[in-house]
Image 1 (tube, rainbow, N blue to C red):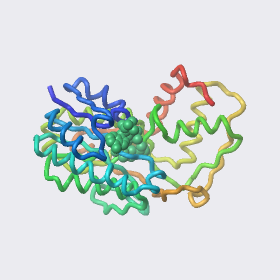
Image 2: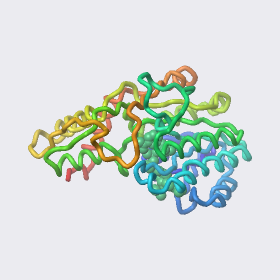
Image 3: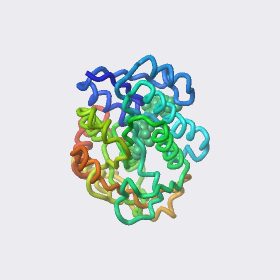
Length: 300
Ligand SMILES: NC(=O)c1ccc[n+]([C@@H]2O[C@H](COP(=O)([O-])OP(=O)(O)OC[C@H]3O[C@@H](n4cnc5c(N)ncnc54)[C@H](OP(=O)(O)O)[C@@H]3O)[C@@H](O)[C@H]2O)c1
């Protein structure tokens, strides 16, 4: 039985981790009131009190545009706090599983990014997450950094939920068609993490950075079209859905710059741990079935 300290249980990935980690042992999951990343004392006290074998850190500040207004706070939450967590993990010999992001890259490549590619973040979120990776590695303990991609779920704010709401309220929606990624359901990240932790000794031995995302690729505009098609299939054809129009990122007023190409090469995690993610289409299909089945899935 592992003692697992889960941070970020109210987030997209953390919500599913609460369930996927439960069969592996005792899961201790403080909320932000108990463990605030801006207060180093609360981080250290909670970890020392929990004495975990494994810490899974799915917490962080993920609102990419808002972060442009307060990069210092993002650096404390995403950059400094993971280093404190990693130091405490080393002190109690715990393995740290920490999520990072494909946004550490600039998106200039045209082949999937491998773990050894040089990071070059182009927004404050990416810079803060890269600082977090570096702090985790510098602490000198055992760690796995999982770099994740476009993440969505039936909770909080994310692209599919925002799109479904807007597509009901508007006649036309412009969606960027030059950003390429691999949309990944938060539930799949939680499942893959639990798979990794079924073999904690191997996870300790094979520490480092791993890329993890759904298979396949899609532009944001084509992803949006598929989301609307699936919503129509589930809810029946009806009028009132917005028409989608493809635009370039340069036409969309984002506060934070977005990397255009965010594909991750997942071959390292497959060869070391045998983890293979389903395609983005299969994940989206399953997600939309869950979305349609929710009692509050009525749109608008
Ligand atoms: N979302 C994406 O598209 C995406 C893509 C790639 C990688 N990732 C990475 O994957 C991980 C999980 O992402 P996610 O989408 O599940 O995140 P999320 O839904 O935004 O959830 C973030 C979690 O962090 C907690 N948190 C925020 N600020 C905190 C603070 N100051 N102290 C303590 N806890 C705090 C939140 O608690 P509250 O409920 O109290 O706010 C929440 O539990 C993150 O490391 C993220 O950078 C995300």
